[in-house]
Length: 115
Image 1 (spheres, rainbow, N blue to C red):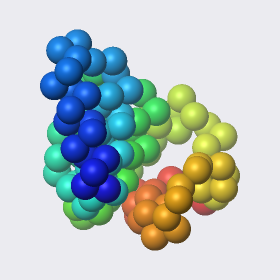
Image 2 (cartoon, helix red, strand yellow):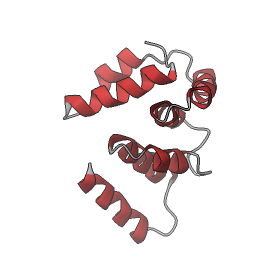
Image 3 (cartoon, helix red, strand yellow):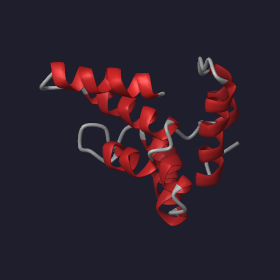
């Protein structure tokens, strides 16, 4: 995870006008590293907020114990993604490390995303 954060930081340095997916990728890496406050700040940036990144924001908030905020983000995420399922997401994401996948699933469940 640390190496991923280093590469993302380099990408931001090399591109003064990063695309929104840079912020999504950074937020995911911060979440995976347990940097939940940083992930919340990143995922609430104008560049990525109000996108499907809300599920990662909700998981970050849930890990911080900010469950009311997490559930509010879940509700907004589900408006745009009514068929989302944590189980389907977990089965289709290409994680190399089962512990990292379990960490994301744990955050999704704490946030109240559908099983």
